[in-house]
Image 1 (cartoon, rainbow, N blue to C red):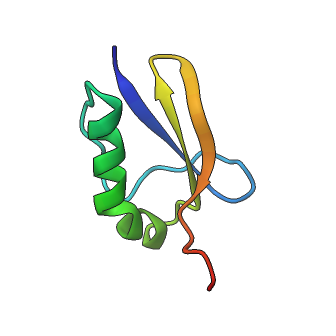
Image 2: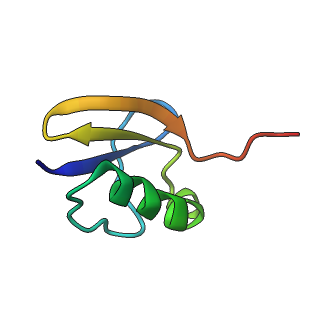
Image 3: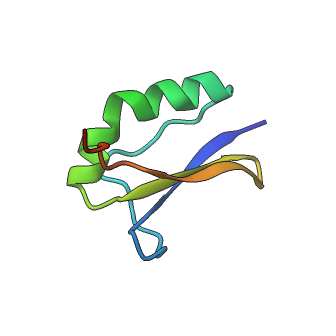
Length: 69
């Protein structure tokens, strides 16, 4: 099984990530990676992400923009 991220603009168009993801073998590894690089991805033009297990969407869209307090 492979876990992958899809990177999108707010309007749903796919965009290339500013940081290239590695190959993830677990959901936890994929989520840890996004937690470490989300700011760089946002600065590079990605607004939201989707997580996939092979071709199955697990969740998304998940915004990379911080919640306003």
